[in-house]
Image: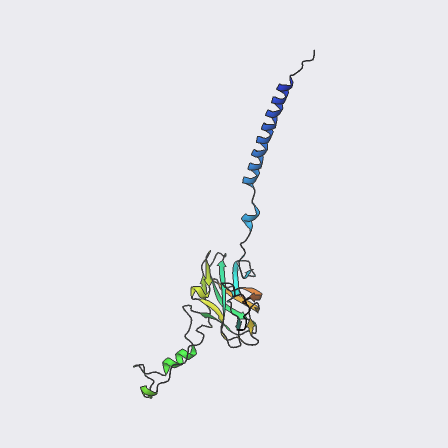
Length: 233
């Protein structure tokens, strides 16, 4: 004997089944989302500059840039800014930086930074009273303006699991002491920059940057005026 189920009951049962299926689907989706590593968890934020690893993979360089300027003419000081991370199990020091044929790289503002030659010469030419020795005070000429202050002997310590930030904002940074060759203009880069690191055990490693780019200005450059002047009638 065949039993007939009323249409109303069939519709009610079908609706309940659909609701249960939807609830199960939501539960499965929420479970997957909680267990997955999303793309944003592993993405590195976009920042200006170069990122690189040392030859042994234990030292990381981040946000390496040349400080912005409209141009650096030959003879100019060219600031270099970097962040350095030590992932080794021993302390390490940044002990040298070269910039190809652009000129010598020095440490500016660090504890080992030496006073400029111009400033030292001016101080040596003065007597303890502050007047130039052997010259009347009335004929005293102004001291020459200081040039780049920097130390060619670089020794920046990076602790285990720590980092250092070398930039003009921290008052300690690297710089090409005296740019040689062609003018370095906005949008260009320093070529063949090599950072040398020495570990506590005496071993060394390097980071080579084929091109260290100039960063962008902190504020947008002014746009040319679109207003056209009219001659007085």
